Amino acid sequence: MGGSAFFILEICMALVRPQPVIDNPVTVRAAAALPAAGAWDATPTEVACAGFDWVMLYFTYTQGAAGGAMDLQMHVSPYAADLAGVEDWFYQTIYGAGAVAAGADTTSNVQREAITYGSTAAGAETFAYGPVRLDGTIERVRVRCRESGVVGSPGDCHIVAVFYN
Image (cartoon, rainbow, N blue to C red; front, side, top):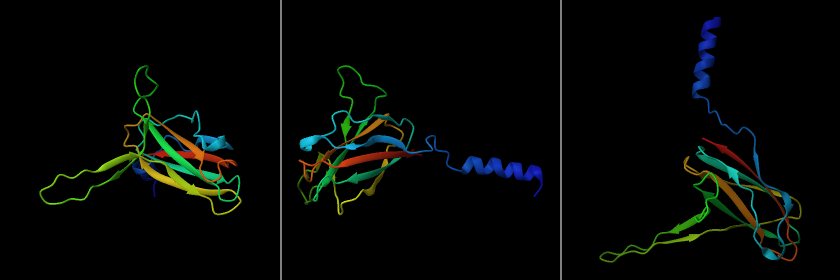
């Protein structure tokens, strides 16, 4: 292949190859113990994600005692920064469709959702959550966590995220 043909091929490949802006995982929660007594993280780390369509979250959880488990809850914000007098953070939700019956209205339910990961061993365990669709409309995300298994002996949790289009 001639030099100019190879150059044109490189340009075409660059146009069709995904070009994520964030190449490396971003730390969403530094590796640390979960709060005591089953409390949620008080100030989860906010991560800017404007323009991205998807996020994949990667967790490392080490139980504090046999039977340990952790809950996670993703929050999203349509705002680039907190605004005074405006609710800035919104919880992920789960939707349950109501039963459909002829001649009757249907009521469906939507509720805030928390997800529980129950550990299976004493060492560090890893799991992935997602991909979660952001649709390019979310400005910031954060993930708060808590110990939900043995709340008197909280485990450790570390989270990284990869954002992509």
